[in-house]
Image (cartoon, rainbow, N blue to C red):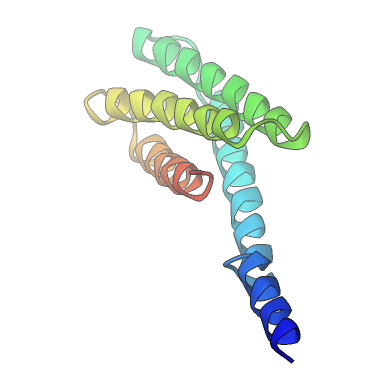
Length: 132
């Protein structure tokens, strides 16, 4: 009787902290955040012409962000170490933050500012969700 109780306790300790629904929702939120960031970055790259200096600089940041999205996707799909995945998400957040700060203080239109603000919030959320 005592051994059975001990086995039940050990099984409970080995179970993950999140129930299956929460784990699935967690992974869904990660996938959605990456997808949303990718859509925003690619949309801004297509929409922003490289005619003015601030637009060229913004495009440079957006191309860097696009590269970091791909790096993050590869790190997740290749099942790299959790710290490496979090580091990729953190770098993506930093690049988008830099672009966001530049746009807020610059001459960008409201749509571009709002899109980058949403991308930055998603990158911040993604960084938190992927924290070890």
